[in-house]
Amino acid sequence: MRIGEGHPSLPRYFLIGGTFLLIAVGLLEVYSASTVHNLLTGKPELGTIERQAISAAIGIPIMVIAARLPVRFYRALAYPLLIVTLIMLMMVLALGEVSTGGNQNWLVFGPLTIQPSEFAKFALVLWGADLLARKEKRLASWDHLIVPLLPMAGLIIGLVMLGGDMGTSMIIGAIAFALLWIVGAPGRLFTILTGSAAGLATIAVLIRPSRVRRFTAFLDPASDPQGTGFQAMHSFSALSTGGWFGVGVGASREKWGSLPEAQTDFIFAIIGEELGLIGSLSVLALFALIGYAGVRIALRAQDTFVRLASGAVTAWLMVQVMINLGAVLGVLPIAGVPLPFVSYGGSSLLPSMAAIGMLISFARTSVGAPETGDGAAGRTDMLSTRAGAASSAVAGSGRPRPQAQRKEGRTT
Picture 1 (cartoon, one colour):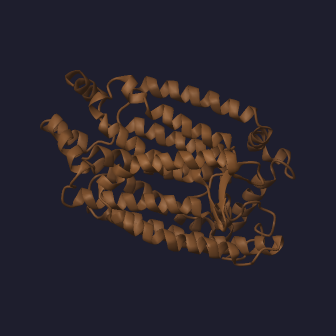
Picture 2: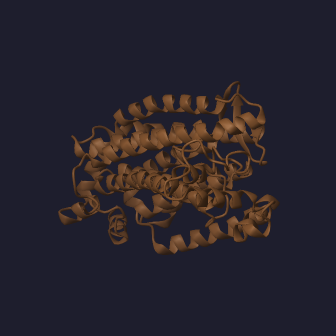
Picture 3: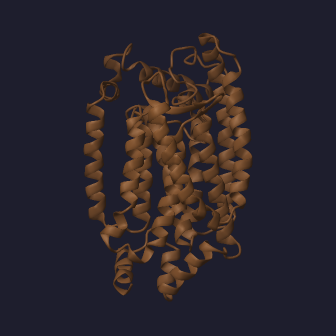
């Protein structure tokens, strides 16, 4: 089956089934890993899984409501959510909680702990998609293509980096790249941005000793197995112990204090140990279904905002999966990024579930009646400027042709 063919309801089924199965696996493995950690640290045995279950229970109605909202609501939400997110990111720098790793990522309101950088991903998706959809006819010009998208993305990344969270900054950068890719930005721009990003990332690593240690440990974890390579070596041990079918749920040995962050960033290592290769591949297959559904929704979308937002959300989730798994498998440096829907943390789970709900809404729109309001206006405008076969090509392609965009820029 080629992308774009098949039953039109498949994306919704894949999104719903994949998300809920991943959440179920996450709850099971967070329970398995966190009870031991809590016993060793003197915390309530079920405290972690209770908080994760509450987050999932809150996320389900959010996801259901998001799946019923029209496109115009998401476009109207873009600017308010961006402003609130920027304010919260600034509050983190002034009032934020400092984690044990030295990062300043959290806002604490009584019993409620929030990581605003997780919500910044969703905010950039909505705002960036709305911005580029409104400027669609002027994107042949580099100034309209870059400004204000890249300055705003840079501001968000800068605020997150000031808190010390380089992993989340990489994902936010990937969202901006995805938005530019989908609108057909020229290759020269990506060359410049990639070189600039690589240079800035190198500087960010060098100015912080803990990041230097993480990078050197990634190159050769066995050189210091009791120091900088400790986490990576125990992650490898957990994965190698699992075999084909795992040692059984709850039977992990690495979670007994050997593997740091077992219930968060390294939850996949516990999955590999307890559920084995078959369980690990099943988890990867569920992520693949979500990625396929997101790409298919983006390719089928006639509304420019829907196409951009769908592609950006898919890039966000899939890049986050790759960064997390890369660290667990030892092919990327440890970046402290949670595995979507699976790792412990409500601040990561809730925005991700809201984003999946939005994709389900877009999938419903693409197979149902035309959207009213801003969504319909954007689609009508796009179709009116692309006659005949050109209109069909844009609706069926995830990346519009740059030549077509330049032509529109001349006629505007």
